Structures are given as C-alpha cells and as structure tokens.
Amino acid sequence: MYIMYLCILFLVVACSHSPRVSTENLDIDIPEQWSMPIHEKSDDNKDWIIAFNDEDLISYITKVRSSSPDFLSLLENEKIGRYNASMKGADILPRVNLGFNQSESRQNLSAFGFADSFLGSQGSDSASQNNSGSNVVSFKNKTFGLGLTYQWEIDIWGRLLNERIAAKKDYEALKYDLSYIGFSLVVRSAILFYQGVEALQQSLLSEESYESLVEIRNLVKDRYEKGLRSSLDFRLAETSVSTAILEMENRKNQLVVLNRQLEALIGEYPSGTFLKQKKLPKYLPEIPESIPASIVERRPDIRSLVLKVESHINRVAQAKRNLLPGLSLTGSLGTSTQDFEKLFDKDYGIWNLGLNVTAPIFNGSRLRSAIKIQKANFENSKHDLVKGLLNAFSEIEQLMYFDQSLKVQTNALSSGVEQSKDAYKLSKERYDKGVTTLESVLSSQRQYNTIKSQHLRLQRQSIENRLLLILALGGDFDYKIEGSN
Image (cartoon, rainbow, N blue to C red; front, side, top):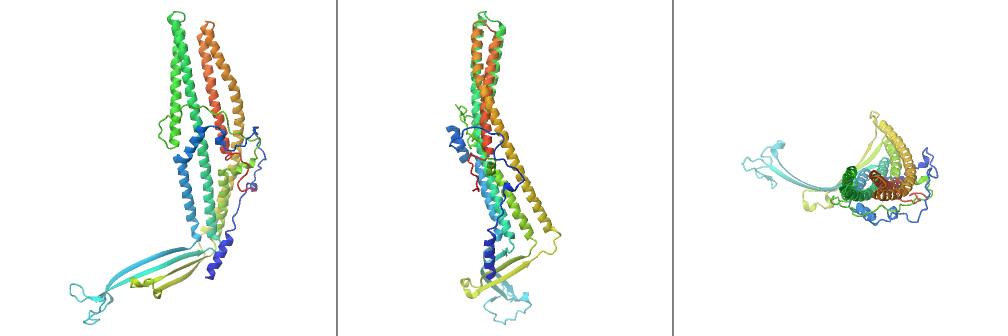
C-alpha cells in the first residue's frame, strides 16, 4: 500500500514537467515587419468572410462547414486521433478486469487406478454407475468463481509518463493539422465559389459578344443583299458569329463543371445549376499597414510542427528509460465455491499478490539503437519546423508581392475596358457611315471582349490571392498569438 501511495505521488509531481519549444530557440532571424508591406487602412471588422459583403458567399461557406463530406470527415478523423492518443497513454494506469467462471467436470475412479470395489458395494451419493452396468464409479464436480485481476507497471522512472505526454502532443499536433486542413478547405471553397462567379460572368460576356456579332452580321447581310456590301464582309461577319458560338459553348461548359464542383462540395446533387446571376465582389478583406512577422507562429500547421518537436523530446526520454529496471504489481481478488449461492460469501474468498522486477541485461544493442533512432527523429522534427517556417515566410512574402502586382494590373485594365468599349462603339458608327472597314469593327469588338475578359480574370485572381494570403497568415488579422502574454 505504501508503494502505491509513493507511485501516485511520483506521477503527480512528474506530470508537471512538459518540455516546450519556441521558434526563438531556432536559428532563424524573424523580422519585425514584412519586406513587402501592403498599405491599406484596416477596419474594425476582422472576419474575412463578412468583409466580402457577400451574402451568397456567407451562405455557401455555412453549408460547407455543416454539410461538406470532406469537412465532416475531418471531424471524424479528430475523434480517431483522440481515441488513439487515449489508447497509447493508457499504459500508465492499472489494468483491472472483472471475471466470472463456471466449470463442471466428470471423472471416474478408473482414471486414477482404483478398483471398482474401492468404495464398497453401496457407493456414495456423489458416485454413479454407467448405463451399461459395468460398475464404473464416476464423479461430477461444479465450481463457481468471481474475482478481480489487476496488473500495474509502476512508472518509477517516468517511461510511461513520457509515452503518455508524447501521445498527447501527437494528438494536439493532429488537431492543428486537421484545423489547418479545415481552414484550407473553407478558404479554397471560397476560391472555388468565385471561380464559379467569374465563369458565370465570362459566360454572360460571351453571350453579349455573340449578340453583338449577330447584330453586326444582320446589318452586313441586309446591306449585302441590297448590293451595298461585298460578299467578303458578309463571310467575315458569318465567321465571327460561328466563332462566337464556339466561345459561348466553351464558357457554358466551364460554368457547368464549376457549378457541379460547388454542389458536390456541399453534399448536394451535382445538377450544374448552382450559380444563376452573380457578380464578383467589389470589397476585399483589408490588410493592416504592418504585420509582425511573428504572426506566422499562430498558423495551425506551424504549431503542429512545434508540438511534433516536443513530442519527440518525450520519445527520446522514453527510449532512454527503457534501459532502466521495470517494476510491476500483479494480483487477483475474489471467491471460489461449489455452490453458486455462496459466491458472495467472504468465507470463500481467495487472493494473491505478486511483485515483478525486470531489467534488461543483453538485448543486442536494440534499446540503445532505439534511443539513437528517436534522437534522429527529434533532429528531423526540428529541421521540419525550420523548413515549415521558411516556407511560410516565403509564401506570405510572395503573395504580398502578387497582391500589389495584381492591383496595378487591375487598375490599368479598368480604364482599358472603358476605352476599348468606346472604341468599339465608334468603329460601328464609322462602319455604318461607310468610313471604316468591317475588319476594323470586328477587331475592336474582339479587343473589347478580350480586355473585359482579362479584367474579370484579374478581379478573380485578386480575390484568390487575398484568400490565399489569409490562409498563409493563419486566419484573420488578429495580432494576439495563442500562448503569448
């Protein structure tokens, strides 16, 4: 009993020790500011989804979080990880089993080498003769048993404690990994949503272009039939309409594909009719004027890498303690009787208690090799953390650079759309007056259509880049990092 109390006390004290890893201990110079600043006035709204001011997006993301098979699968994987961690850390606790047994046997005296007349001619109440009349005496016996058995390895060196802590760290790392996957799923769902919106706008643009070319074709056809235009103009106009039909069908196909992906993502039947009338948003989640580079430490995948390093610290400690002697208690407590009614009678109680001590003497260097393996795993986990941090910094810096570049391109094309539209209108008027050629009209129409299509694509790319930047930063722009003071 004293041994048990001492072991419990040891476990309570040992549980207070858990190694912590900080990125400050790594050989990386983390700057205070990003090298590619983005100067925007940030508002008080930190929710990037609401910042788009798009009710359809909010509704879609809500469905993703509640109905997406991929998202629901992440929740189940989190449960699996929790149960696995519980199983791996359970060895530190005693194993207690409750058992009930009933046995019945029949023996005869011949099996023990006794003569048939050993009990005399009368026999006994518990003996019986077989049906063949051979006077072979047999006996029946019933036994009932009820008891508890237990086995407990006393963790005097903390080996099992380190295993338990490592399992907990692994589970926490898994939660962060799944959290990052879930956040990535939400962000990429928003990206897919706006890819669908762009495809819808591109489809509408192709229909607009088709209607415009049909209008030109009809005008040319009318004048050709009156002998005012050549057959070359009419054939060019017909060719342009045919080309517009091909472009329009391609745009429709792209829209249907994205609509089906959007529907399947939220667990709905992929009918291909998800988006109807929709425009790209005018507002993007704003970025503060400066962001401390240490904000990357809150990224779930980075925090997972940190926890994996801490887990491997405990794995090394566990491997070292495998070299030390082990102490375990075994025993049982219960009753055994031939009468079921007396099963709970303490007079029929039985018990035993055992103490086992084991120590490795010769194992072919397996245990020491295991220590070296765990140390190598620990070093690899540190390298993975450094690599993850550098990749995160590189990703963010690059996305910030793209953000500025896309802004310049979008602004340049915004005026280009208006200019090309006016040029197209002017060319139609001049052609109607006979001042310019049909080739000029068709060329200006294609230029306007191309520039407007590029503008839509750049708008969508700007949204996508901003969403990827939010993902790379680990969420909304809240500077407080979990665990910091």
